[in-house]
Image 1: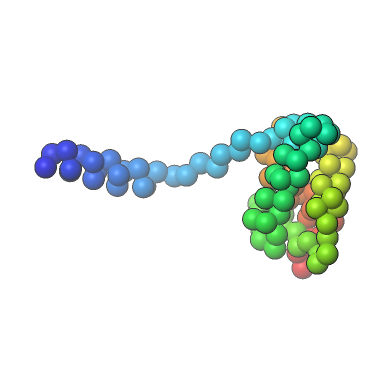
Image 2 (image 1 turned 60 degrees about the vertical axis):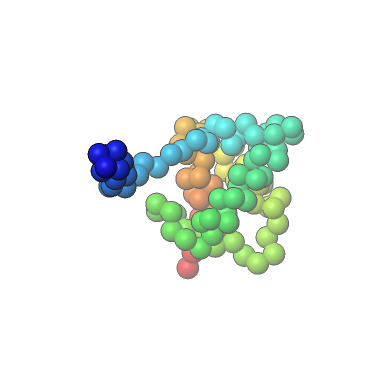
Length: 109
């Protein structure tokens, strides 16, 4: 019975902890992937994943809505170009930079 109570207390305590946002991919990583032909699939996959999650949703101060018919290559080209112009931002989380780049082109209305 003591083990059950201890486990229950532990589980309840774990549920009340604030959740930290984990940023495993930085702009530096994404910029490298987008500029290396052997890693370009990682670049494209990352961007498409973030677009699937954030399209039409507000993320921090950014919100973008991709138009119907936009291609994967267009998305990658926009983000890749944005990263090239802003090397000083590469230390930020990549998802923030993807949102920023696409918000500049296709902001939510």
